[in-house]
Amino acid sequence: MYSNTTAIVILLVSFLVMILLRIHIAYAVGIASSLCLLYLQIPLTNVCQQMVKGLSSFSLMAVPFFITMGCLMGSGGISDKLIDLANALVGWMHGGLAMVNIVASYFFGGISGSATADTASIGKLMIPMMVDAGYDDDFSTAVTITSSVEGLLVPPSHNMVIYATSAGGVSVGALFMAGYLPGALLAISLMVGSYIISMKRNYPRGDKFSLKVFLKQLGRSIWALLAILIVVVGVVCGVFTATESAAIAVVYSLIISLAVYRELTWKGVWRVLGECIDTLAIVLILCGTSSIFGYCLTYLHVPDLAASAIISLTSNKILLTLLINLILLVLGCIMDMAPIILIATPILYPIAQQIGIGAVQFGVMMILNCGIGLLTPPVGSCLFIGSAVSGVRIEKIVKAALPFYICMLIVLMLVSFVPAISMIIPHLVGY
Image 1: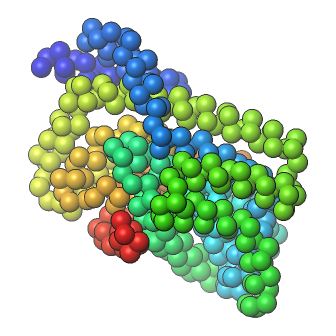
Image 2: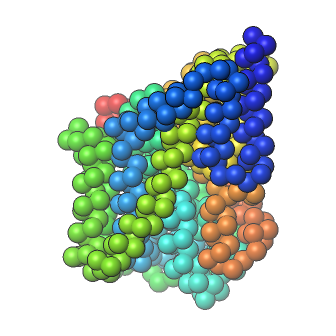
Image 3: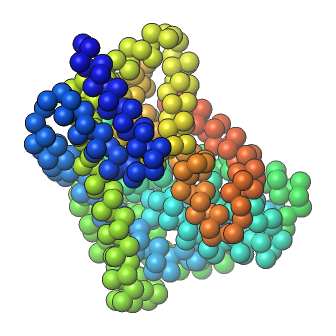
């Protein structure tokens, strides 16, 4: 028992020290795990075995394809068409461009599945447009970064696939279906917040709604929106797996970007693929090293110890649910999204099970918590990207985003305590 306690200390303390030293999370996880194994005198051949085991998952193969699809669509002239569609739909409201920003993020999230890609792509177009129309630059940036979280919930989200693998084979199709309603609820809450602020500051509204203009923009955007149908309908109807649908979606995205919208050249394709490789390399290294970390946690019975320790504090389900959310929110302040999913799922998921939270609902909770973490200092990647795109100081953006943080926390509480929000659509389609 003493040996195990020391090993746990070595594993967790060395990991935290390396995080504080700004060593990349993928390498920090691998080094901390190796130190733990050395102390336990377990052969380091286990490192290679566990890395291969962590990567040899058919479901995990979908992640590179979804990321590639998002990169191709994001660089293929999709963003401006989705913004035009959103403008035709909600631009007539008070603070119309803020509403357009939020709805465009919902559409774009269904294509890219990435909050950072959403912030960069939508932000480059919408933030200057909003500022030129009379919106404050900090408000414009705050709307952009907070609405980008919708893309993490709306399928196809590669983070959902990572969670499904980490949680032990949860249905990817069920997770995809579960994200639609929470994503829509998040969009509505942000729109309500934007509307209230827009009325107080007298931000302008756009042109009146025109069905003719809306149908025209829908026709221009339909090819991009069909990419979502390929993935979601294919998986839900059982035509093909998430991995197969992702591969088909990549080919479809390439054809649409090159032959239909014609805003991406073959030279641009190679550039996009190079960017994908940069992203995929670190994501897959992280998946491999996290598998070693998970092996160490399981070997040392850390999930059981953590569950016992947390449940010993209280037996109240409401307090335990709040505590799980608090832990994830704190982790979001110091870690990126994928590491939290890979490391925290084996620890917190058993606790969630004990208090009656199902795997799919917990997945939505985790993704939303991690999404909020992308907006909080000191390591919030969307926050930094938004600042870089707009040129607004981070502290100014955080202050402007405070009302939107409240909107997001309200949605998080609803998702946490009302299972139907996550489960009604999966149940309707047979999951």
